[in-house]
Amino acid sequence: MAGLERSETQVSHRERARRCAVERQRGFSVFGLPAVAVDGLPGRAVRVEAERSNGPWDGWSQMIVRVCDAPVASTVDVGVVGVDAARLAFADVHALDLWRHEEPLDGLADVAFWGADAPAAAQEFTAEPLTTSGDEGSYGWTGLPIRSALRRAMTVQAWRDAEPGRGLAVDFRPHSHHWQVMRQVRASDTESGTLPLGDAQILFAMTSWGDGVFPVQVDRDAAGHLLAVRITLAEG
Image (cartoon, rainbow, N blue to C red):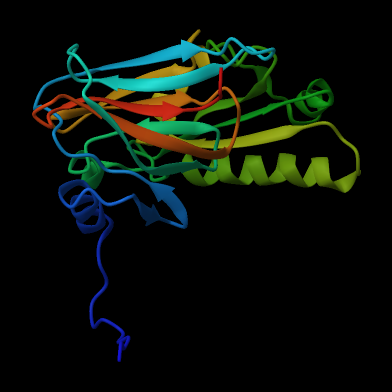
């Protein structure tokens, strides 16, 4: 008879990723979202390509981690990836140990807000238009001490919520690794950005479709060597 016992220790995300890659499992869970780890990647930079959809909506149909241009002998489903913030990350699992998502690297943060009522909010709180690429039409403050930035963000949010229907989005941006790469994403025509981290480089890219769960496949040659990892974002 089968039984189930609670483990004395938790399994780290790195170990889950290792097992997924080495044992070629169909993904694993990270903070409640499905992710995929793949073995056979080389110890060098690889290309990440994207193809446009031919459908009625202008968006990416797939993103491809291209390892080698060679004849494909097999294509296998390896799971799905879940997106909860409109973007995908392509990363070396060891480099993620160094990742600081919300903690500012310099103790500073930015506050940005935009929307139909942004000019009124800017006048109310003496905020200036933001001049960074990708922030056109936004107002706020840059390079504030973290606590001061948080107070301003909360004050603007409270002003928005005080009157139902106000059109305003507020973004609190600590100077973290996430902030660094998202500055590139917002300014990029392809909505993508890269960040060196340790001995690796991480790439973030917007799905162009928003959130969702997207299937992942790998291409291998006749000897079983990895040729490409494909994420399908839209059919056609």
